[in-house]
Image 1 (tube, rainbow over the protein chains, first blue to last red):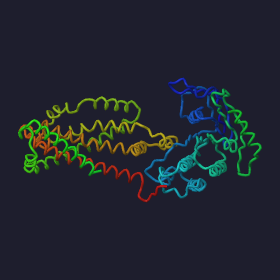
Image 2: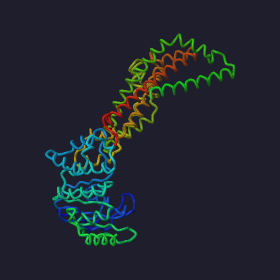
Image 3: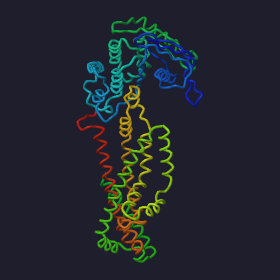
Image 4: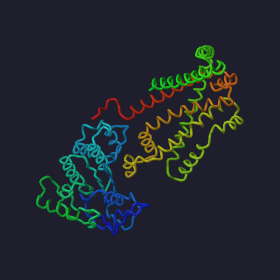
Length: 230
Length: 255
């Protein structure tokens, strides 16, 4: 699988605000990839362009082996008229009940299945939202701050579990957590601060697949590289 | 909710009567122009049974008219929620027609249908239909992106689900609009009765007006106010019950 962007340009409709300026990059194979950068530099816009949510752009986006692309974000909500367990059952495709049970356990949401979405904390809301996406058919899942407000330890467990359970899928992880993207992602597209005029850079991450699988020196090196590109 | 509506009306009614009595005594007006408290109570004893029957007659037309307009507003509102040409056409038509005073069309309705039940019903439903339609259109045409996104990108979105999501997210607004439209429906029915009907409290007011009997009009206004307050209070209570049952079941605990 391959995700390629060539000379991508995007301006907010009916304004002259350039959001993405001549962006080219490529990401290959399954696993966790990241988009990293300060707020307002166009990370979400890029995600929406890739997921066909916006059509008014110039340049080319090529997706080989990525026929189903889903975009999830952290402000999504589930309808409030039924429990989250009920909603989850309704959107679980046939034959994936086992996966659903596993994910509920990994995401530590077993005790909350009878609750309404509005009764959950923000971290719990983001976790249940991510589960329903993971249960769908997809080749590329864009996770735009999908684990925001989740504590660091649980976030690490969740990312490692996703890497194991969905090792044939590609994930594009948008996050503001520098250490996390450096540690778990293989390719990190860094959007620099527009005032710095550094543009876009691609940095290789550590792509950890287990808790033990970490060279701290290399991780510090990656973090430094991203900071320099920032 | 119900009792608050009733005592709010009683306060307004009493203030209105006191104001008129102040004018009466300040300018030494006769009982023929503004009757005294004793006169109002005496007339109330005489006409109350007839007027109570008339008010309930009007209320029955009001409820039926409002029900018809709610069904019509939701049907058209749901059909017009899309940004397709038909949706835009429905919205533009609704906005233009609602700007026209429906009461001005009443003579045409009376000429075509006579002064019976159907005319009252039609005017009542038309008067509360357009404000309802605009609110329903507003609710149904506004996407709830945070909820709908998942169903759209996974191909699960159906029109029934879309309507359910938008109605649920705007339940308070819809309940308020429906409860508020009860006053419009009642006003429409009374206006229709006042113009050319042969039954209902509006017809009673017209006769009292010809007799220049302000005491009868005070009694009629009191009964109309009490009945519409109870009806609106009941609608709001039903709305609150639906909201609480739909959003959080009793067994759920807040986390």
